[in-house]
Image (cartoon, rainbow, N blue to C red; front, side, top):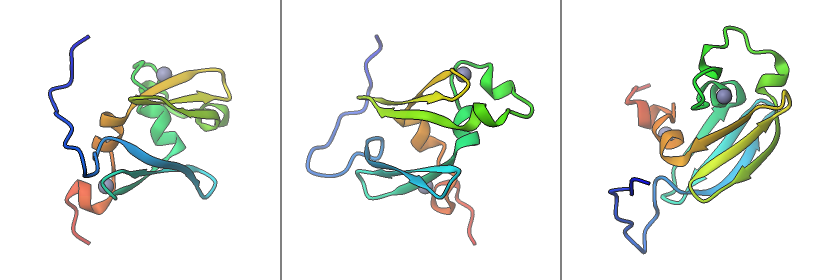
Length: 109
Ligand SMILES: [Zn+2]
Ligand SMILES: [Zn+2]
């Protein structure tokens, strides 16, 4: 195990820790982080972000591959079981780094 270098600063929110995970509409997952930031990830984006490597290669993922069967908050990752039976472990640090909102991508509207 390589330990994380970041030292938690207690008393304020951790940008890599989810406070609340919820569904957004019918095709996306929303994560509110403990630092107050909110991210929205379409299911297909989450499937492609799967660290196994094979999922990112899916050209046109079938519907079952982008539909979560269940989602579980683990200590440092989100576990998503897809209806096609595949399982993805998405680390919170990576998820937060993959936030596509305007503030995180530096795109100014
Ligand atoms: Zn995968
Ligand atoms: Zn963001």
